[in-house]
Amino acid sequence: MKSFYFEGQRKLQSVMRGGAWRRGLVAASALACLLSLTVSAQQAEQQQADRGTPVVVQPGAPGQPTRTLPPSTNATLPPSSAKDVEFMQGMIMHHAQAVEMTALIESSTQNKELRLLGARISSSQSNEIEFMKRWLTARGEPVSLAMPEMPGMDMSKQPMLMPGMLTPKQMEALKKAKGAEFDQLFLTGMIQHHGGALIMVKDLFDTAGAGQDAELFNFTTDIDSGQRAEIRIMESMLEALPKK
Image (cartoon, rainbow, N blue to C red; front, side, top):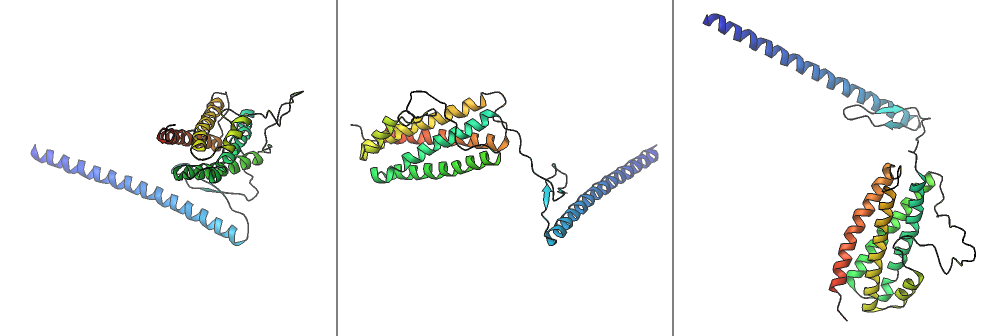
């Protein structure tokens, strides 16, 4: 009886070793196949490059090799909604005023913390303006928001404003202020301005079918998180200003 038991154990172990060996062989074969496909794709790309032919590569799904597409392949952009376009056009205008506000800092205050903040806002929003212009141009859209016709209204005196943007009166007061008064007006005005950008992002995502473009989605979520963080910084700076 014991002999039968031990013989059975040996057969079972043998079968298990054989199964593990076969699984290892299948995995090794699959890996070798994948590597072969990758090398072949790389060789094809190099051959095209040597001939001066553009190489168009489509990334593979997870675990799958890349594909080399014909040089005539044209990229197609995902469809964008009218609200996407309107958002980008409006945010260019919105950002432009923030950059204009930061340009006043150098001649209006010696507050080093405010100067650093202004430089950061100016740099980030100038770069974002360029991104938004490229996004619109790639889709054949104008970079400027179409202004509605308002009979009898002088748009130079009463310009169209996005949410949170400073009125001409507020901007004039900011331009005239110096020192501590400027610091106060700038911080309160930029907090208002950033809050308006958050409203614009929320309005975009509250609109059915809008904000689905991957580039636009990543961009707007970055705006939302970045400007929320800057609002908290500016609120702390405002609290630290000397009280009158």
